[in-house]
Length: 333
Image 1 (cartoon, helix red, strand yellow):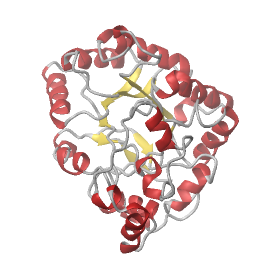
Image 2: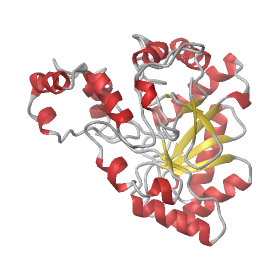
Image 3: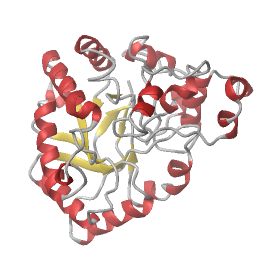
Image 4: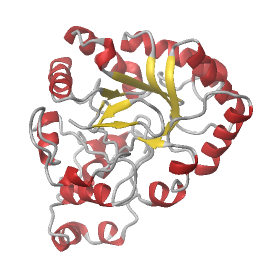
């Protein structure tokens, strides 16, 4: 396994990470969740990603129970949570958003569900138009100073909002956001490649991206239709929010109107299958992170590592990973 620094911080995360969106507390049971986390950890993964909204908190409970059951050493892995959407159905105004109250209480709830005494990474899952950015920055700084959070960041914030948060933090000698988690794949490139381009060097921003395979769209698994129990089907069933993430609405012409023939032609034209196309796209670009989606119920974490050219512990790294630069990070979601 390769390890990379998170932006300009000193935290080193595994090049491959493991996330729980949709799967934990929904598609798979605890036994399979345990097998997946064990396989990921045994292959060098040290970052496990989660959020309050995933399965309304159940995903964090499953992950916390499994990690505790496996008795993983706390100093041997990192765990994250995200705050904004809330962890209950139809949340009241004080049960969602980025107010000081909800940021604090959501952190404490995540600590209990994940069965840890601090969060290594804590994300603002979306920008909150009802809360001043300054209030959120002060809340995150307080949690860090209390020892409950080590690094805080954002998810799907605009470059202007991230800059404003950093400006406020520096003006008041507070902890600034360290990382951002945006969507990034062949169908969604503008934000990571253009909008954030200057932030990597100006702010030392790190990123951990989500949906590198567009909920499986880029693998070709939906060529014959979208099954209700599939990831894309579950995203649609949750009103486009996908338990905390927006629905994919492909705008690329070949995917919007080309159908199966268009998708296969796209992959064939690049001499790659669809999933490989998505992986190589992330590696070939100049973005600081690459993401790879796992396939619970099929090859699982180990298979995903091998398909991406990342050998298991003690193995040789494949040709794809030779393109990784010092700032690149990969997350399984």
